[in-house]
Image (cartoon, rainbow, N blue to C red; front, side, top):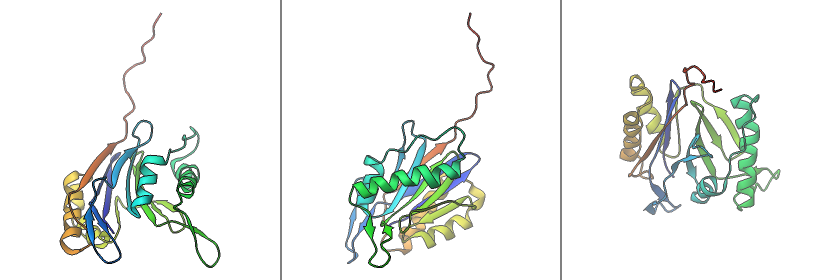
Amino acid sequence: MTCIVACAEKGKVVIGGDSALTDEDFQQLSMAETKVFRHGPAGEFLIGGSGSARGGQLLRFKFTPPKHPAKMDNDCYMATLWVDSLRETLKAGGHVYFEAQGGEETSTTNALIGYRGAIWVMYGADFQIERVRDNFVAIGSGSPLALGAMHATQEMGATRARVELALKAACAFNAACRPPFTILTLEQPRASSAAPVHRK
């Protein structure tokens, strides 16, 4: 149980998460590993995971994002190559289960992914992944409280302070969330406007 919050604006993505590790009896520990981290060969992904801690470990330490083909748009890449590769990683790590009826593959790991200035939300129940229309989103047991705080602070834009306020709201009123917080920012690289240098 947790709270992961993300917002995006003008090519910048901010994702923050709490540190609670809660079992079914609501016994709680404070995780040393962070739920929010940079990923990819050049740190081009910002990821925050909720649900199973094991799923988060596989996502962080085992999963290798596939190469993004130059002519493939972002939504297609995330919904096919990216999430299919993640599914295989979770399966190899023993973190994909089969429902009793229908045999559907499922996982208890959800995630928010910042990539190329936008936010995607991935639900492990059926590996659905979608880019959200709003410029903010939250997952985890504290998400309703965090979403209310994010809605009330929209004028703050994509800022660390705004995400921190949302996480504080979740921790104040949801027993399964707790500080300390990890809040990271990812800015989309700007195309260089400098003229090319020609060498003889």
